[in-house]
Image 1 (cartoon, rainbow, N blue to C red):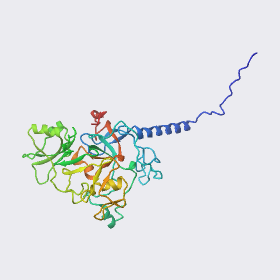
Image 2: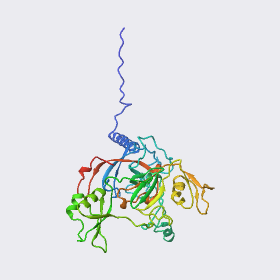
Image 3: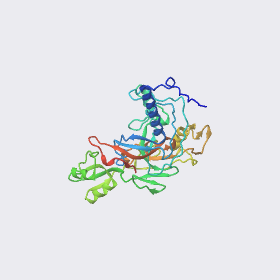
Image 4: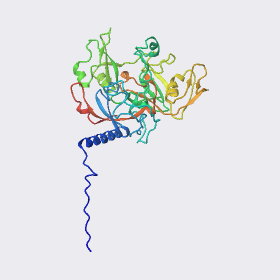
Length: 388
């Protein structure tokens, strides 16, 4: 008996060839989804816009930030356009995200946790909710007088706030103290980063300052100036290593240190704590599960963490501190906090100005420079350098 093979039916009517437009749309969707997943869970690229981390990181260094180092943080605003932050490109008044759905803080497991000395990328805790002028005074007073000049603050979800980068110098539970510009952690001096720089005074009776040949030899930039009223005293930014070598060459150099006077810009911006950039603390950095006694002398240090970051109702209008309507002589923290500072210590607006960094604001660890350029040249030697 013979069996005839059935010819396959043509399926051209069911499976039509995709059009070029459809192929492009599918390819773009696939690329966007893939890139979004990579930026959310693996790594993200950023550019350094300011000199606050010099000379560890320079302006126009392009870096990779590892999300896996501390664990990927799930977005607070899942309804958002890809590759956007707080504003739409070309349309600054349009928000590219929706707050209809806000996810609570959740971090997936990572390779480790924030360590002292890590260069960390994070969302700025206070930039969108607290406005201050150049003298550090509260804008609320001026807003009442001139509301048209001072609009209300733009309160954004955590993952849509400004992105900053600093070095972690204080961990949860540490006691931090800054004395004459030297950082002490738990009463021990903290070793400075290798490429950290600070301002120095150079005294030169010939009124010439450093010659160009010396500047070029040590890579000293032009952020120097002759102090007004004293032609023998110059100010430069050096690393500690450059300062040592200049002293060996016979130059008279001393570090610039602020006097022990209150700076109204410095956290917590009150009149009791006589803090400035070089004299600060001692202060205990909050740690999850740590209980700190509260009183009128220290409540201002922890008020923002208690009320804003950990969402409690705090009332300090009377002599009795009230948390969620109940008298409180102490508080147990629900999150870990960190103390962040720039390597360019006198050119950095860091935790000395805005306080503790909550763990839910941490984005990832800066790991590598993949591109770098100056105004008129490419910095080839910085390509693929690890960030330490």
